[in-house]
Length: 353
Image 1 (tube, rainbow, N blue to C red):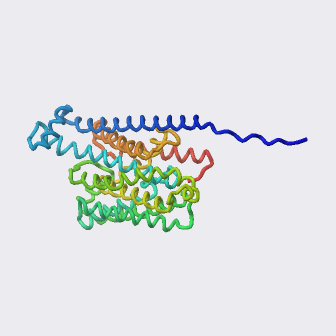
Image 2 (cartoon, rainbow, N blue to C red):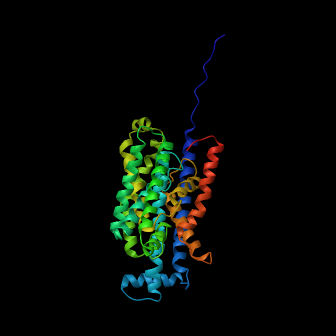
């Protein structure tokens, strides 16, 4: 009896191309919807308050600022509300980009900067700069950036010898706890007036934002967001492993280092500007990935998801309750149950960190 070999499976190229086009179309539609939602919430953030302004009045203030003329509500809109709304948009975008990039680099949804201690490093540096050095503005942002980078380097150095993301996450959680203790020690040594200021900052607040604060984060986004968006196109190859990525022409080590530097820088500067707005970096990537579907690029949608989350939660914190809450408290209420759900789901599936 002779055995005949089975014919090789044929690949339906037309079906693959059609599926790729469907994924791309879905990703573009989702990205457009998220951008529209973020801009709508931005407009609502400027319109709503003790006095409600119309879009025409807001445009009048913007036009007056350009032409150098005064318009009705110029101080409230141009000085109080717009810096806050724009900061919410930019900070959420920065946290979303940074979180999604690190999660995909480490191939673990728990590996966002606010979970693995990078944000804690930037927070400790900013609190030290505010309470001890009496710094503000750009100097605090630069200090937070430097310490955030050093924290990421320390986490990677302690985790050396293991490529497993679980080890990096556990080391990051440990270093983050140590840095949180440093923040607590600094608060104990500070005066009661400074403690109140620092606690408002640590809760992730957009109160009192000025255009000078917005500028530094805008500069950081102009420098690092294009870097992340361009290099994130290499993430699918990196997810195949270094050997496969190098075989496909990707300089794996260099691309990974640049992506990590860009993500840490964005996260640190955003943290120095607004304080650690809880769980935005952690939530934005998984939500965006579910919206765009498997196999589609999700870094830009993750940034827009982060912006939408911060703007929506700030609106809720300002107008949905009798008291006004910092945005970080609202995002914490939303994000903590998702973290527990993710851990429970991994436990049921038998997975580890």
